[in-house]
Amino acid sequence: MNLKNFPSPSAASTRLSPGVRQINGILTVRNFIGGAWVDVDSPETLPVMNPSYGMEIARVPLSDRRNVDSAVNSARMAFEDWSATPVKERAQIFFRYKALLEKNLDELSALVHEENGKTMDEARAEIEKAIELSEFSSSMPQLIPGEILEVSRGVECRIDRVPVGVVASITPFNFPSMVPHWTIPNTLVLGNTMILKPSQVVPLSSLRIAELLAEAGLPPGVFNIIHGGRETVEALCDHPGIDAVTFVGSTAVAKAVYVRATGSLKRALCLGGAKNHLIVLPDAHEEMSATNIAASMTGCAGQRCMAASALIAVGQVDRMVKRLCESVRAIVPGKNLGAVISREAKERIERFITEAEQAGATILVDGRGVVVPGKENGFYVGPTVIDHVRPDMAIAKEEVFGPVLAIMRAEDIDQALAIQRSSRYGNAASVFTQDGGLARYVAERASAGMIGVNIGVPVPREPFSFGGWNESKFGVGDITGKSSIEFFTKLKKTTVKWNPEARKNWMS
Ligand code: NAD
Image 1 (tube, helix red, strand yellow):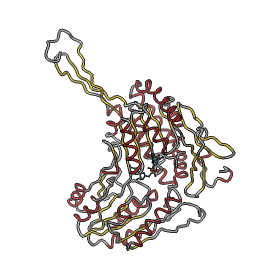
Image 2 (cartoon, protein in one colour):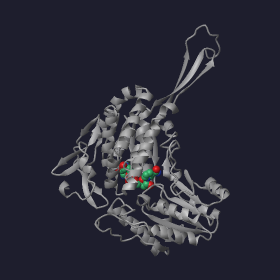
Image 3 (cartoon, rainbow, N blue to C red):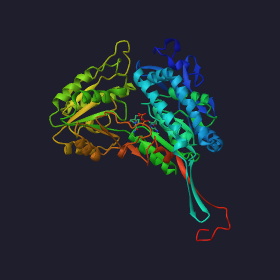
Image 4 (tube, helix red, strand yellow):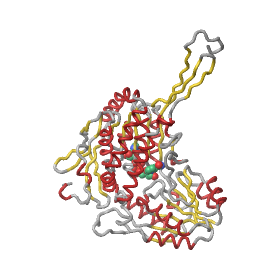
């Protein structure tokens, strides 16, 4: 792409140097290895698009096994010094890094907006979440002190948390900055070194992350970036120099990565796709529920693994549904609704809607065929509400990943719970009611890792941890918050005796 014709008003990616190489006006992103930017000698590159305009803004190379080798060597070499650095010193770097994220908030948000297509407000919220994640990591010195006890006369046992080693983190397109921050701060403050493999669809935000980490004082080699797709990920899973793999993305790939990484004897934590149900009871607060549900289904154009995707209306809730449709109609593509990630995504989402219509569902709000003036090539889908969806329809069962809500009808709470519990996923489930007892009944029985009561997007905030159940997550523990400490550390148990005069017993 010729930079002179750059279509986006922000043109944030033009400031990316030196994480990109420019040849004849075409930006190609580079790997970040051992604290240096490295060109990838790849015969194949993929386009990075600006989804709001449907225009190519850069190219991303596909790293091979040799590139992965050099990233692993760099991370292994840095591990010795970094893991021996006291945790309080490591945390200091993340105090400085958090301040740098705050200082560069506008630029980082523009970059997310540009490569992902979400609105500027949503992009800003994503960076604010990255700031919160960095802040949490700075509290590790308070969270990980070990234990010590005299277990026999003169004999002490102590337990220390030590880093696992080199961690590979593989991330999806829908949060180019927040999801990498699910792992970067905690992994590094806990003393590991890491290799980030960002989504090849949104590789630009990670380049600024690397620059700001270096500016905050992170030593070379502690954090590395390697760009690529399936083969790059497989090389990371197979590499004997990597100790742990985290993955966030679709369920099919999460399963494959979990099997491959654990098959080569690494610990792995792989988060997959989702289908989140909202159970709406007749006593739900109309205004609060309608605006909350509309925001949940349309935020980030429905491309959130916590987005409302299915609404189960219990009993007589027609007034609520009418009020919801009014809220949804006020959400306008190109204004307060961003683009979806690609032309293929737009076509897939619209196909789901058409198939539901053909199967007998009623389209209450139709977002197909949207064109945004001035952004005619952008990948926009308008907000869509579909009523009288049956639980056996594809739109009721599959992850649509667009601003689409499928409404199913249930006669009572148990029927609604049966629909929710039959899902193969289990990220989030919410109930909307003013009755505490009914809310508790649903919360206790829903089969999901994150439950909302009158909350459309029940993402736990730090120090609470993020992670679903069923086919929304493979592996033990959660990826953020206090639960992540278990995954990113291992325990060293030391038994000590210095005093030969201590009375003997079976352990002396
Ligand atoms: P994706 O699975 O296509 O890609 C995720 C990562 O895997 C990318 O880095 C990609 O390069 C790599 N990859 C793709 N195909 C691969 C293959 N065959 N083998 C190995 N690696 C491969 O996911 P996406 O489209 O980028 O992201 C959207 C999905 O992510 C949705 O399903 C969404 O629900 C999910 N997601 C889940 C969570 C969660 O917390 N559970 C959070 C965010 C996104």
